[in-house]
Length: 356
Image 1 (cartoon, rainbow, N blue to C red):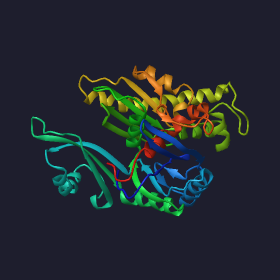
Image 2 (cartoon, helix red, strand yellow):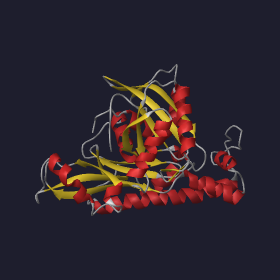
Image 3 (cartoon, rainbow, N blue to C red):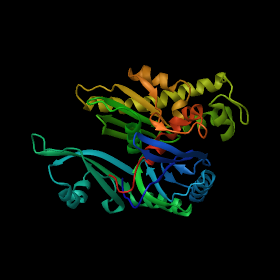
Image 4 (cartoon, rainbow, N blue to C red):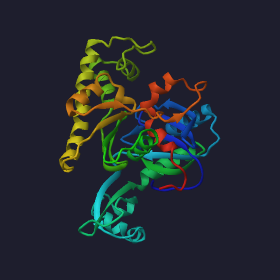
């Protein structure tokens, strides 16, 4: 979204806990999955969307690309976190060309950073002026140094950052590629990652509200480490019901279950605040469904707790819902299991150089 260059791309989701890479081929009916894989990152290689260990990130990207034997060099990746600002604003009705000229001036009152330190982009939502002669615009601002850091780690891995998107918008692209868009329907797309939860509320296929919250599965890992005095690896294993190096167990120990319940309450509370804020500003409008994605959306009891708290149906999203794939290469059970983690990468892989 923030800037572009040439041809089909690798959808590369550089998350806080792992890197996901996907290549999709456009077909008459939608998309076909050509390649997909993911690799874990060391703890704290990425913190709140910022790259803290560039060599580990570029090494992991190079490793993953090599394992998948990808020949493509152009990448679509995304950024998120506190260095990215997304705001829906109201401006006097004007053309795209006029707004190109004045966007820097208009953005200064909405962006809490020095305007010279950010890259700006926008999308006009209104086709016609409203009764007051105004239009709605989605304004995106991202710190230049954050964009440069992502470009550099991708370049170090021998690739080119052809498109830099926003995580919440990649979710929207994934949803549009896989689900029917109903006129007037409002759905919430919530990606619960290791460190950041991204929310994108979409009406009739158009984003009407976005928010990133510094909340995710790492909170649970840290609490298990702290309260049970175990290593990072042991905590990661325990939170999904197993001991490090063992197969998953059906029974999660009671002390871990208690920690999970406390953290689920915190994450659900953060999502509820954002949903409540949107509903308070959207008179007489209701969200029909919440779709969850991200590696941490499968924390035991989270989806059920969220549905009970907000009283809205909650479902784990399937980013391969309308994507063709070879069952010889990818077992349906595997894609169903990893699907929530792949949601943003799928959305990135639907992009093409030069689209808007």
